[in-house]
Length: 250
Image (cartoon, rainbow, N blue to C red):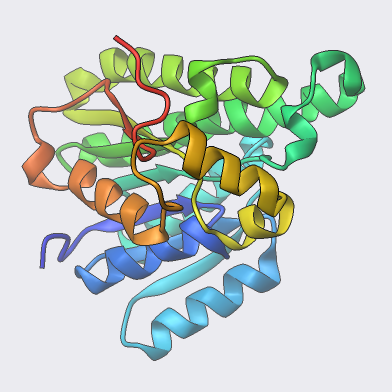
């Protein structure tokens, strides 16, 4: 198993991709801390993982609140021994934030940036010392293909995540911590299927993508496992698009 003896700190891990990441990492031997604002959902996910034989804990954590993040990481270190892998998955991503800036209040924009951008900063800095003490580690940030157009508050926030990926790859390299990102395209998570109208899904799949199907959780999970593993030991500062070929840029 690729991650035997490793511990992963996963934000937004109660449902969707975060839960899929937790399942995949524990299946490969890792222990996981599920850091979530949805305490009940995190506890249910952790309990299911424990029932399946994994080592998992659920932690109340608003990633926008650095004190909550610091406390959650400290509990992870105390309970699970440290942090080797950080998955910055938590984010606000409904269609609401894919409108023009003028369509949202300043408080709404600020709140989204606090989660999507400052959440990455808070969690990465909080995990750094433990990862360094354990000889290095891997950070995977979840960006989005919308970051390559950046026409909305959400797209700009995910562009910032790509920028943070490069900045932290440089800053954490002396600690042997690799930092990469995944930019998923249209993926069939619960939130996407609820939030995106079917006609929009059809348009993206048929007219914009080169591979004409909706992305699946295993598509994104496979990329995450690769970037966290020794197979990616020579890769840092990169954003991997997993999006059926949309958008292609030179």
